[in-house]
Image 1 (cartoon, rainbow, N blue to C red):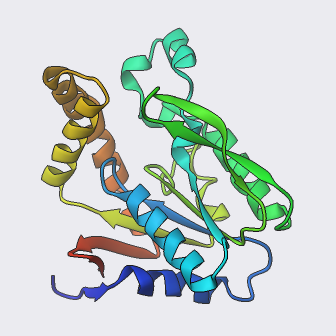
Image 2: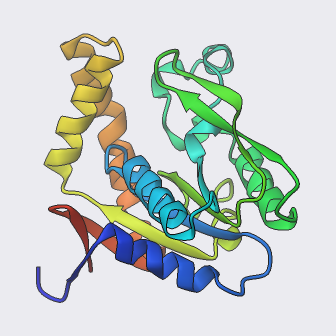
Length: 223
């Protein structure tokens, strides 16, 4: 790929560490990208490299998926079939807790919700930030510029976008939905009518990122 530079996970973590040095309070890195891009894998990899280099738990992951509305809420609103689209998340709650992470001195615990793909529901307090000085938050809509989501970007000290070709995303999402209990036909319908539409929306936000990455072997390419 012309104009791109290949880099390892360790080098990406070192970039985060350099930017976090001397930072007042917690440093917040956001990783955005379409569904199925591998954001969670990248976020966990960066966290593990940071903690390994530091010899202590200085970083952890704060997933946007913890702010899914519950299935009961979505069912009551008549939008359960649209789960995963921007309006099926508590964007205001996500922004508020990001702000709390920024404003809270490391050492004071801040519970953060996660998402359980077995029961398909958010889990309150799935991770707790305590002495962590680096937060890695990942999700589809971190760079979305609309009234509900635009307040996310100012909370991030740096934002990355993970880019993946559409056919790969489609294959990954089909496998994910089938593993989650959908029939192949239902999985295909969900991907076609919801996930890929979300992917197109998210792709339009990549220009708001500080760094655009693509997976390349065991590392990544920076565009």
